[in-house]
Image 1 (cartoon, rainbow, N blue to C red):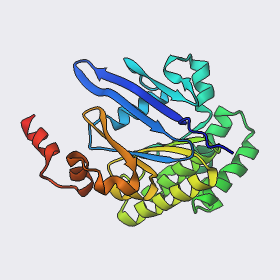
Image 2: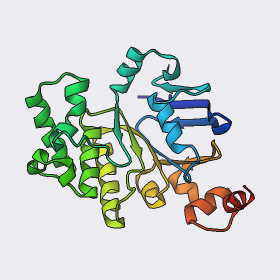
Image 3: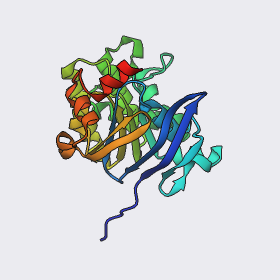
Image 4: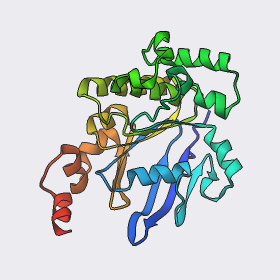
Length: 260
């Protein structure tokens, strides 16, 4: 069988600005089907804005975002909702609903998005919690009773509850200590492999990026300045990438900050 070379997500010449501030300045990026692509970059470089454009929370001034060969920039709300049925999302701070129990949070997309009966949705939610190492007793708790690491696991369980084709991860290890961050990284790798999903992650955590990525892309000043296999990033030949991945204070990025 021949491999499908069409990207699951294809971003072409994407532009977004807020007033006079240019945030995305012609972003081009392909996310191959079944692969994990991680976008790295510092704060304010456009990572979150790019993700919000893909999800339809923001609209670009120019460019296209194709998911399964469909330009989601140009579709109506009902068509977008149909596309988003394929998508799971782990938010930066888990973004759990405090008014719902843990299992209801995990089952939210099943009940509200797919109209599933609560009993069936609860069974799936408990199974997904088990997949991320949490027992059924956690399901009846309130999110306020959970630690940061547990909240992140619940967020991951919710992201995978619908068995999505695509999963987006927004800074998955932010706020976690290095050990719990590594636990979350391992869970992401394991669950994504189990689902066979295509994933796009935004992060500034290089340990996380190296662990979960097949491909890494760096965004700087609204452009993708380097993209390639994770195994090649240490030999990128790009001074901006080299400075960022090694966390050096001196380099072209710092020089630009001083100049500004």
